[in-house]
Length: 294
Image (cartoon, rainbow, N blue to C red; front, side, top):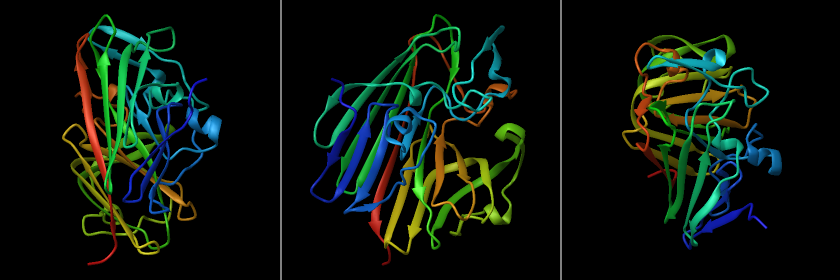
């Protein structure tokens, strides 16, 4: 019988529950306090368990306009994969992964996707989840197994607790407005209410925007729990999406991505990487938990 959950834990107090269902993290706790927020999502793990705290975005993140794109003289079509009218977050978060390796502090998952009538992408994805002291490291890789070159991307979709005192610290030079179907609109300088360079609370209303020219660093402070979370992404991830439905929600999402949302419909690559058959793209994000204060 397939194992649906794996628990990673260490003596310092970091515990992470991982599921091969969608390659999802189900929970992350530091000495009993949640640092990710399990939230209902359309992913496979939510369908089984009711919620998930983070899932991988492979072979792209966010939506593709009109469920089609043109690349190197060919037109490619995809089929919506959730109740959303646009294909969302690729395939891997909706499929079962297999366990390649595991021990008390590390788990490596593998997923293979075949091209079909609903997607042109054929690939292998590998995700490794590692805990070390107060650090949680998520490494994600995709290898093109299609017969032709295609544009690929990667991302992670974590849900973080949103408390009244939550402060976000992150710097980005530009952001994208949002238009119909939750697609990016126009690129603009970051407005004052979305400038988190010196630390600020999230705005009270709807928030669903992509940011770029990011230095790969982010920090969240939760005075209520006395915890600080720092995120460090490698150079693969230079974009992020910030999402929160409202001030009444008990979560928000900070999604590191290798590319802009809807980059398949932009004149430039927007961060997508052309992978010839057999070529790979990989990236790593590390989350570290600390105590709040000096």
